[in-house]
Length: 129
Image (cartoon, rainbow, N blue to C red; front, side):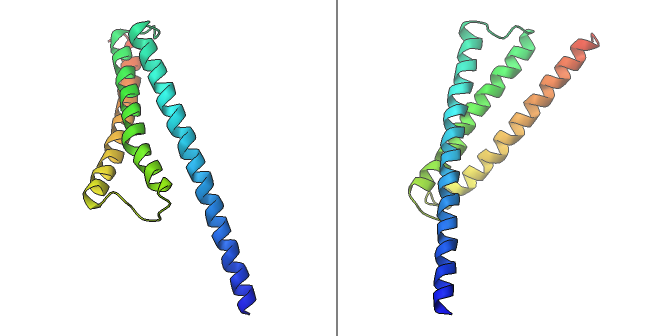
């Protein structure tokens, strides 16, 4: 009986380790693509005027890109640092935990709000108001 429990527990730990490794790889890919992609489009839209839309839409898209860049650095980066410490708990303390939660909600709200404003702007342009 103890052999079965030890074997089951070892399998469970290996599954958690594999899940943890996949999560770290996914976070790294998300961070790299998020930073590089948003920085590239933001740079191209500012220096090369690569986005050919009305000024309001360009302004909204630039703000959306800026919010995404901030989210990469202020949300994904602390999660990655926490996971690199190989801890199952939060290493940054209680006050940063509350700030981190506020950042997550603020960036999510800002993204949703800016996409809705962009859609409303397009609607108003289509009906010529």
